[in-house]
Length: 226
Image (cartoon, rainbow, N blue to C red; front, side):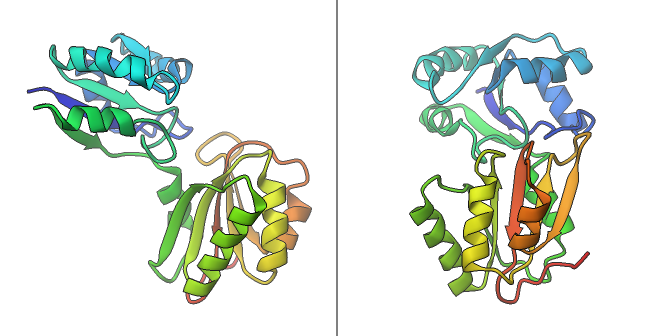
């Protein structure tokens, strides 16, 4: 019986990888990666020369039979572009396929933008909900924000630099007084942590760049002030 390892990689700083993850990558007969270019940089840093193959939502049907054959030879690893696989990343179809075989599936925990952001937010409550990327449609965004308000729970989500301003404008409209923690490019060279309300965030992020993890305070989930 072989093992499919769901392996977490750094979200920015390449030093944020565990010793176990490095060992598993070296021992895998093949590494399935969401972005082979990003993964190759990580492998080069740690002198890992194992075979690598792309795995995305678009090519999963073609890749799954190939990866199942590799599992007959030995353990394999699935990595996303950054962070923990299957957290807003591809991989669910592969896990479903492997779960129907005699092979095992094992997590190799590590970096996650969600837990990294929560660790510095200063929430006084453990009550929060993570929704991945905020929906594109304003109506769907509004439903999520209002749900979080009604249930008094902190809302955690990812946002792209192309849509963050529209999301902040909607938050400004629905939750003008609520505090936000906006984490940009966590663990990377231009890491930034912003604390304030939506209006202040709109004044600050006039030309947003990078990847964002946003936490909105609701109800009893207090966020530490700056």
